[in-house]
Every structure is written in C-alpha cells, then in structure tokens.
Length: 198
Image 1: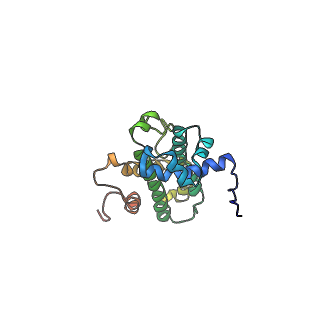
Image 2 (image 1 turned 30 degrees about the horizontal axis):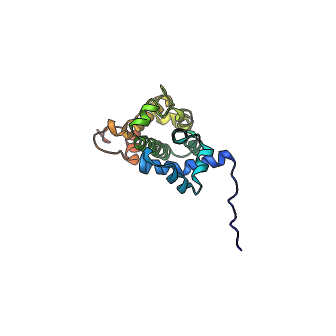
Image 3 (image 1 turned 60 degrees about the vertical axis):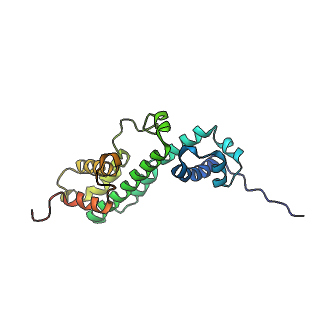
C-alpha cells in the first residue's frame, strides 16, 4: 500500500506570497474574471487554501495590486548599481529599469479593468499625489551625483526630467507613436532633441 505524502505546510506569509506569484500572471491574462479555482490550480493548492490565506477574492486582488505597486524591488536593484559606471551606461540602465516598471504597472492596471480602478480610486489605493516614479528619486540622484559636472542642470532637476520623460513616454494615452524604446529614450535624455552639430 502506498501513501501520499502531504506537501510541507507553509507559514501564512509564505503561502500568501506563493499565491500572489501565481495570481499576477493570471490577472494579466484573464483580468478579474479569473476564478479562485484557476488561481488554486496555478498555485498547486486546494481552492480552500486560497480562502485561508485571503478573506475573499477582493482581498487577493488588493494584495496583488499592492505587490505590483511596491517599489522596493526596483529601488533595491538601483541601489546595487555601481555609481562608478559611465554616465551613459547608468542612464541607459536607469531608463530601462524605470521603463520596464511603468510598462508592467500599466499592463497590470489595464488588465484589472474599470471596476477595480473605481474601487481603488484609479491609483491602486496608494500613491495619491506622489510624483511619478518618485520612490526612485533619492537613489537615482546618488547614482548621478558623481557625474554632476557633465550634467547641464542640477542633479535633482535632471532626475525630475528623467522620471517625467520615462513616465510620460510609457503611458499609452500620452503618446501618438506607440510604445517608446528605452534605448532611444536614454540616448535622447543624454543628447537632447537637436542633432549633433546643430
């Protein structure tokens, strides 16, 4: 006679994180129409386990929004960038990372649909009044400070311009030419609008 070994019980926070890792791609694919059964299958757990980790589906969606909006991963990544890299390398890396973050948030919020936007006041429940990508300001200023003699404006102003350009060119309702290219945008930030020699 064979016995089925039960999976190792997870602490509640670990279980919640595991479910969130499964639900975010499902929301991107199916929006809020995703069922708790589909979530449970993707997470490899019983459907009842979902409700032991989250009070209901709304609570699960709220937690998914909070995870997607959480800036700690991107700030941590930027804090690990070598400040002695060339200005060009740092700008390209910063723009690429910020562009990816905004694009990811936009895709996720679009997948949620108008009901969730209304329920969260259009802000994912957080960040009302905060500047776009404002959570990255301090770390980007520290990265650019060694190059302040090569930057035509104060570093804080340069960071404002950089954040605003990345945010604005990544938002689909603000552009007419489709998605922006991070490498092209980084080059534009470094060299400006005029061709060299003009």
